[in-house]
Length: 300
Ligand code: COA
Ligand code: ZN
Image (cartoon, rainbow, N blue to C red; front, side, top):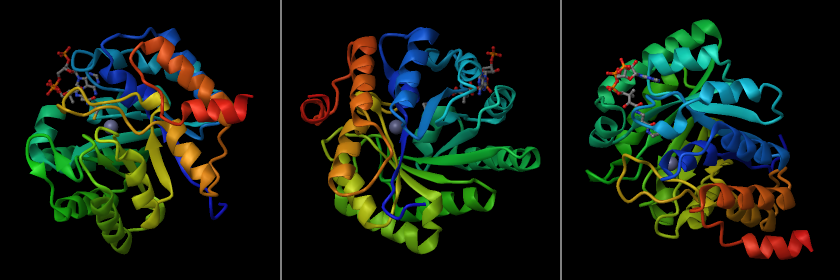
């Protein structure tokens, strides 16, 4: 691994599209994912194996995986429980992501289980995943703040992370689900995480609700994090977390990283094309703040 390389996982096709008022067709979802693959985004979250009644926008995720079997990007999907794991296994999903909220109320609203129950279900899934050789990672959602419980103590995040890693999660994504963290808090938590866990197994997920997304990415970089979620054109939000707006835009994160001398392997000109497509398909995505600058610099 190149020392200054940072891995970007685009979660627009899942975190982004799950919250759109407009439901995209499978062909439209596929065209967005293909545009991200063309732009050489190394990792992409394609969809979710969740109840289609809870999140109609994610119905048909298995068909997307069938159509994407030759993908050059590493593809993942969200799974909330054993049923999600089984569906993802039969769709031959390369990486599955469990989700456990550090806040109990958020966990109940999101997947209708307490955090404790969710950890138990996740342990069961991780055990079966190990037996079957599946790569399962886990999100720790509402890691800094919860829309219902307010500030979340770092001890809850340490404890959930430790249990999931011990149970065999391949990676832990620390998520600011509602975009309520500030860079100082991000740096403090991620420094503390880095002293307890293997940095190579940690990544971060920020929403840009209060325009601190990029600053939070930087704060996590200074703590040693080298893997980030971001969302094309800033798509995003959680249907069960009031106040959550889009993720930090992939084009903004990539532009900042490249300007700082990090490499991402992403083709900026094609990334902008993917952002244009996300805007066109959804009609609501704003596009990253850096988009006009990237267009000027890379497309002229
Ligand atoms: N995929 C598809 N369907 C699922 C499922 C899964 N992973 N897990 C459960 N179901 C189905 C059940 O088969 C059942 O279907 P039926 O009504 O046709 O019999 C129905 O959902 C209810 O099952 P139950 O186990 O009682 O689930 P629930 O009603 O307690 O809901 C979740 C739990 C996790 C399925 C639901 O809350 C969910 O899908 N949440 C997703 C949240 C999400 O994606 N949030 C955004 C990302 S963080
Ligand atoms: Zn999110």
